[in-house]
Image (cartoon, rainbow, N blue to C red; front, side, top):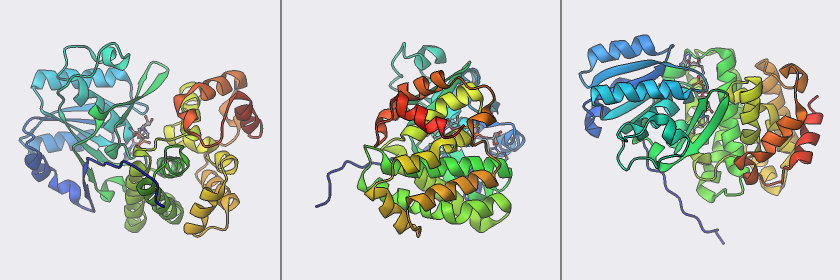
Length: 365
Ligand code: NAD
C-alpha cells in the first residue's frame, strides 16, 4: 500500500537552453515593474547591461559573495527600499539566490534585516516577488523555501515559506562558464541533496522518484561537465539534475552530510558543495540499508559500496579535500560537537551522536 504524504511545489519553472532570453516576458507575466537584481561579480556586468535593455529593471546589487553575508542582504534591501522595488531577481549560484530571497522577504517590513535574521521579529506578511535564476548546477535554491545566510563566522539556514520564489528560470547555458572546480563542488552538492532527500527520515514517494533520477543523471554527467565545461549535453543534464535535487530535498530536508557541512564551512572555510561532499561517501556506507541498495540498483550500480566509491572518485577527480589533514589544525572535539548539535542531524536515518561522528571523522584522518 502506498504511504500517506502531502506534496506541494509552488514555483513556476521555466527550463531550457535560451529561456533566460525570455526574462522580460516572464517579468511582464508576473506583473513585475520595478525589479532589482542581486548577483555576484561574475554576472554583474551582464546585469548592468540588462538594466539598460529592460525598463522594468531599476537596480543592481552586484556584490554577493560566496557563503553570502548579511551585509550583502542589507545593501540589497536598502536598494529595494530606495527604488520602491516590487521584485528581486537572484541571478547566480545559491549565494545570489539566497540573498535575493532574504531581501525580498524583509524589504516591506519596518525592521532591519538583522532583526529577522536573529528571529527578533516575524517576517512581514507582504513580500516582494522572487525570481530565481541559477547559474550553477547545484543548490536547487530556486525551488526551496530556504535561505542560507552568514553573519561574521556564523552560517545559518533559515527555513520559511516567505523565501519561496514565484518563478525559476533554469537555463543551462548560464552554467557554461562555471570553472571546473566549482562545477564539481556544486554537482556534488546536488548529489548530496538527492541522496539526503532520499534517506531523510521525512522522505516521501514523489520526492524519492526525483531523487533517484537526479542521482542517475549526476553520476552519468558530472564528470563530463567537469572535464569539458562547454559540453552542452552534460551542462543541460546537470542543470536538470540539480533542479530535481532541489525538488527532492525541498520537503524531506537534508540530513547528516549537510549538518556536517556547516562547521566545515564556518571553521575550515570549505565551499558549500565541497563541505557536503567531505562526509557524503562515509555517510553512504553508514546509512546503507535496503532502500539505498534499491536506489543503487535503480541507477545502474551494483551496491552502496559502488556508490561510495563513485563519490570518492569524483572528489579525487575534482581535487577536493577529503581528509582531516587537508583542513589544517582540526579541533575534533568541537567539530563533532557542532556537527551533532545541528538540527539537520536529527533527519539522518542512522543516529549520529558525537561518538558516531568521531568514529566517522577518525576514519578520515
Ligand atoms: P556560489 O553561489 O557561492 O557561487 C560559487 C562561485 O561561482 C562564486 O564565486 C560565483 O560568483 C561563481 N559563479 C556562479 N555562477 C557562475 C557562472 N555561471 N560562471 C562563472 N562563475 C560563476 O555557489 P553555490 O554552490 O551555487 O551556492 C552555495 C550557497 O548556497 C551556500 O551559501 C549554500 O549554503 C547555499 N545553499 C542554499 C540552498 C537553498 O536551498 N537555499 C541549498 C543548498 C545550498
